[in-house]
Length: 209
Image 1 (cartoon, rainbow, N blue to C red):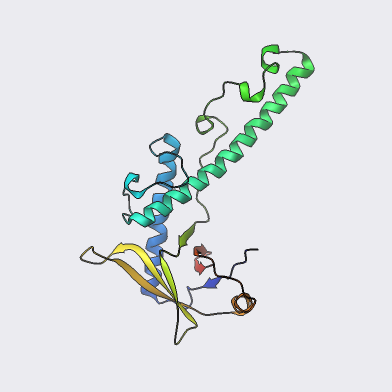
Image 2: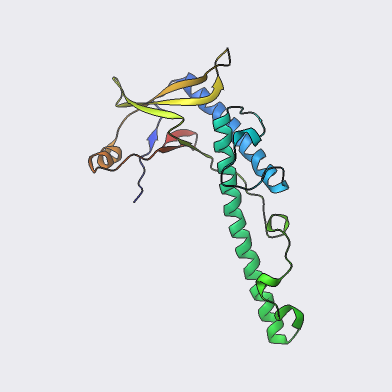
């Protein structure tokens, strides 16, 4: 069983850190949409994972972030492909039933669906390019560390896809986390912390799950 604990950080993080989050979400969404376009037009292959050396450096150049953006773009495309294939198959069943009932297009009804010479689903009329409405930035524990705090219950030390002035290290920011009833309940119930977090913007408020 997977359960989540949501923490609103917009009310406790300072303005400088929130500006970093604004930049992160804008750049992440920009590159995510570009990677989706590249997968659709064949510039990038559709795989589960792809080495960052094969990924173009768009707004975000950090190699690990590029890899995560590609992974999310790939997941979005795969989900859309499944929906498109289902839509096409439903249309096939309706057409097949009509021709069968009216004893027409015998060559068509004699073939199985798998035997039809169909276009690549990405290039078919059934595929619609997905739009990114409710962006979620998904990060593994390569990008963050959770530490105990003093004035707050915990701090999330988050590695950003931006570098210091020398370009040698990624910038890190510490996000204060205040426990609440749900998070305390999960912790006391012995739930094991997963090795990933989601950062979401919900109605202009940044939340970490």
